[in-house]
Length: 219
Image (cartoon, rainbow, N blue to C red):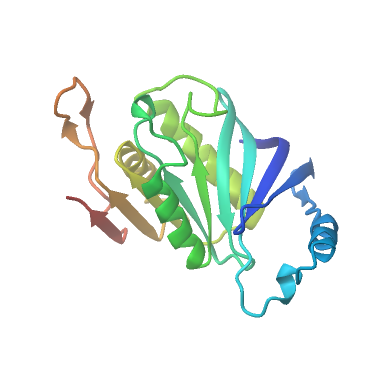
């Protein structure tokens, strides 16, 4: 399993960061009173009173995985109706959870009511370990899903990935396809499959499970 460790930072839609501290696996506190005091001091109307303005926050969390920390970003709406795991492109070529495509996928799922989780693969950011050609990454992502289920319960799960991240997601999809609660949606962008031009990398990308609704964006 995966445990939650360390402190968290929240960033709301206006770019403001808020510290969060986990006092236990399911215990979290938002320092909302400080934010309200700051708005009052600046003569602003508190966010909760701004009519229909949406209030989403970007949370940064360190999870404990097999090789050490797994750094994740979480985009969650106030009311969560599902969980989406979003995976970034190849970590050895600049891929990270801040990638524009991964970011766009996460925000799209968040706007649909999903808690969108963007982990950093091994060796990226604060995630420990070394690149493992998708093998260790698959195990890490399965652990993140287990952690998400412990936080939000058995909600519908969606998988999304860009390039190498899509490759990892096809592996995860096949691992979970015959389970009790298989993923409800798979989104693959710019898939990595077969030989790659100009390098020795080769991807044995498994077929998408026939029973899983899939959106493929390529070209």
